[in-house]
Length: 64
Image (cartoon, rainbow, N blue to C red):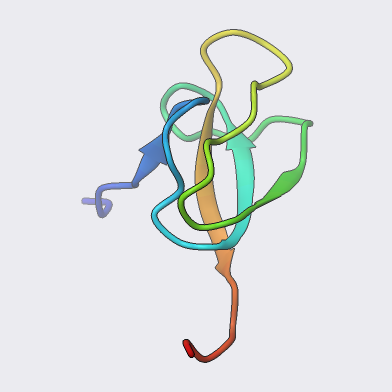
């Protein structure tokens, strides 16, 4: 069994800052790479309808 992936739609607010990969509707790889998204900001539109975002590298910094 695989663990549940957290996938985010364009326009949803990012739960934390980091690098998010553009993936297919079920989390599969796409050729579109990654985007940097800041916590609380909406995810940008994807190159094609139906694609989503998956966090691959959270930002590593201390909170003030």
